[in-house]
Amino acid sequence: MPANSPVPIPPLFLERMKNFLGDEFPVFAESLNGIPKSGLRVNTLKLTPEQFKALSLFSLGENVPWCPSAFTLDGEDRPGLHPYHLAGLYYMQDPSAMSPAELLAPQPGERVLDLAAAPGGKTTHLAALMKGEGLLVANEIKNKRVGHLAQNVERWGAGNVVVTNESPERLADHFGAYFDRVLVDAPCSGEGMFRKDMGARADWSTEMVAGCATRQGNILRVAAKLVRPGGYLLYSTCTFAPEEDENVVARLMEESGDFEVLPLPQFPGFMPGRPDWAESAPQGLSGAVRLFPHRVIGEGHFVCLLQRKAGDEKERAWDASPVRISKQFWPLWQAFLQEVVNVNLTGERLRVVGERLYYQPENIPNLNGVHLIHPGIWIGTFKKERFEPAHPLALFLKPGEARSVLNLAADSRELAAYLRGESIPTEVTGWTLVTVDGFGIGWGKGVQGILKNHFPRGWMV
Ligand code: SAM
Image (cartoon, rainbow, N blue to C red; front, side):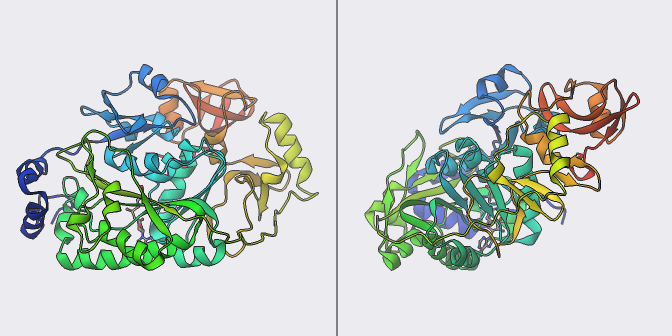
């Protein structure tokens, strides 16, 4: 069967939803035949939503009511193919999937964990809300998915993120109750994907719902251990089944006795959590929110925010283990700072791994033993007699921080050639930041009238 050929919506799913939704069911069922709404969330680390709108690039629709940095998308635009996407100016996301990060509301400077993070929709959102400050650990258990997460994080250009590839259990063993906020965007039966993913329809069964519920309970139980006393735990899914939503939270509350549900803001169209749909869930669960495609713009989500009770659990002691720049490499780094970039990078945040230099989030604890995929911004690599900038640095630098810049227009032939990996004629010499309308997109090296291309192959569209 071709990947997205039509698959009927499972009749048993519809029957269950009819029982839950009662009078609302016909409108819900009708909405499942509608076209999925996509959204575009602006990278506020690089520009404001107003500045983005002024670029008049795509047919942007209304603002997403619960996410001030996002717009709905109308029309036939393909923003994923635009050079601004490669420069990390925005992320394409279902508007309902923008609710978890907004409702968790992380603050700049906090310690935040995104436990099930690939491909990075919520990670990029959390990083922007944190203004790139503090520590955001974005974790993905699956080897196959973690690379995509790391690439999305690198494109975003946030200096406060590390990407890990671990099980929740191993993270809990390493960190203990370390984080101010933990997001669990759990793997689920994906009923909220039925409009856009025929595979989700084909895979659905009540056995699958039950299996997901068990797995979600296990993940949430471990996630709870990672929240500091007084900290916050946000649980979300893109499914409507109460077994995977209210029931999972109710079980955690019952078992741990240490968490209470905080009532979330009810934006127009949101439905309160439904303890009455669950097996046995406390009334407080009506403080959660349910997003349905017949009530709001978006595909569907469940979001519940919990707070851990205050307590006196002590944080474990961390021994710092920065690996600083060696004497041998120091002059190469100094020369790079003088010739190529004009940026103030705090010394304690620099870390050498092999030949690579990274800029890590501030006050990072010792991560020895944790499988790190992206230890921070990869700044560059020490070669025999020089230091070469890395692609993620191009996406991290702010305007004015590169000494040599070649600015190309988004619709120029030169930029199209550069993004295809070709050399382009230019007067600039040495390492040069290529920008698209002022936004860093990659590196090139000017030699004798030619800009040698350093745009990585794996990033070409
Ligand atoms: N938060 C992501 C985003 O916004 O782009 C989407 C996350 S997706 C709903 C759930 C993720 O959980 C998947 O990437 C999946 O690989 C991961 N996962 C699967 N089993 C898991 C487990 N046992 N523990 C933790 N994560 C798991």
